[in-house]
Amino acid sequence: MAGNKPKNPPTKNQRAISAGIAGVIIGAVGGAIIGASFDNVLTGTVIGAIVIGPTAGAFDYLRREGEPTNLVYRILMMTFAGGVIGALVGMLFPGVSLVLVGLVIGLLSGLFGLRVNKVVLGIITGGVLGFLVQTFYPGLNPAVFGALVVFTYRVLSTVLFRNQENIQLMAERVPKEEIKYVVPFEANSNYIGADYFKDLARSEEGQFTRNLEGIGIVESMDNMRGPAFNADLVHPLIRDFYEHTSNYKLNITPEWELRFKPLFWIFKRYIAQPIGQANLPFNTEEAQQGVVSYIDAIDFKCDDIIDLRGWVRAFEQTGEAIYVGIYTTFQHQAVGYVSVGFPLPDSNFTATLLPKNHNESDFLLTSRDTGHQFPGHYLTASENENLTVLKLPTLNEEIEVFVRDEQLRTEHRFYLAGLNFLTLHYTMERMEH
Image (cartoon, rainbow, N blue to C red; front, side, top):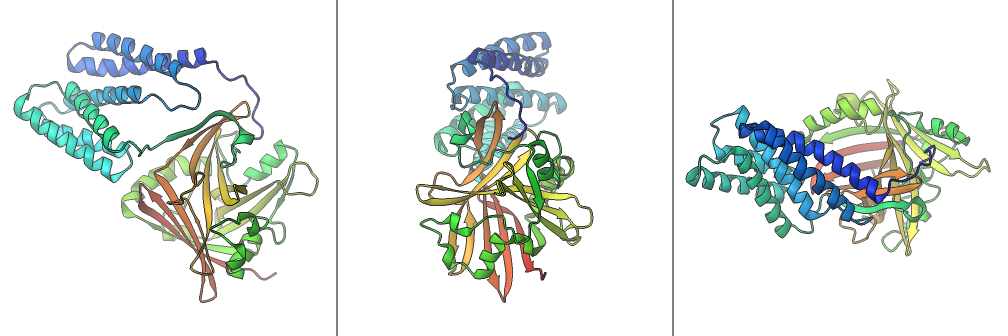
């Protein structure tokens, strides 16, 4: 978070007022759309603003630091959104079957849950309610029907899947030194790119070096030790790679789950490339242009001790950053962890993984079913040297490093709600100096 300017955090009253103003705007716009379906835009606008605005402010005021938004408020807002979607569908497609409307709204509700079981529940809820309303009350206003579908789905989802939240609030305005499991470095501009660490060192008056001879992304794999990991058991080539990463050249081949490729293309085109972060290869052809790897180091105190290690990977032909990560290790109750922080504009994404021995001499970093508190993926934002941290429990990954036929390889697997949507296949070759 270097470079952030201290500022006074908003008071509880200020936050509640801001939430109320945002609620008035959202309520007015949504209310106008719902009101239009009843041929009374003005009434809908006024009611939406009056109901949603004060409700948003009141719930935010009653919420204590570190608590997520109240469940009742979340259900209310989603129900309101369902009414808006129903109204829009009714205006754009007059006379459309309520069964079809119910299926679409139920599907959207389930997709928002990011789990297959929630998608199935949403489709069933929307289809059943659509059939019942179409049969017994075919003249029901589509806005009311949309709200009914979402409300019913949210209540059922809360009862059936109460322990499957998509986002968990882990900390709110907590001093950064109290949170070990995230890497609190952000970008103070809208572009990260391959020179992030050079710019960071300049802004903090630290000493920057790139690809210091023999430097690794970790000082020693011994720092990862724990009940599940003994560094002495890994293959010597794996240990050499982690402790002397700058001596290696990487090749990468992506393997996408086909259903996710269109979504990633949109993400890559409109988010990853413009900000110079998480710009993964879209296909084998793009990956074949080659990858260059830099280990950047910063000595903030200029005492010849490395304070920060970063790993930059970029496309060899264009120099365009693939991703920019900050690597750290920490111990908690005799368990070692690896955290990789990815700076984003005014925020940070951190993956915290548990090291494990695997298949005798292989190495595994994972956030899946570890039985420990810290492994997972986090979004953080800072405010006056304090952090607000959100955990994304539906996202997981595994990094399996192994040696086969004297070739050092890695399979980096990403999961969303248990579905393996991407695997990055790496081969690493030691360069002769």
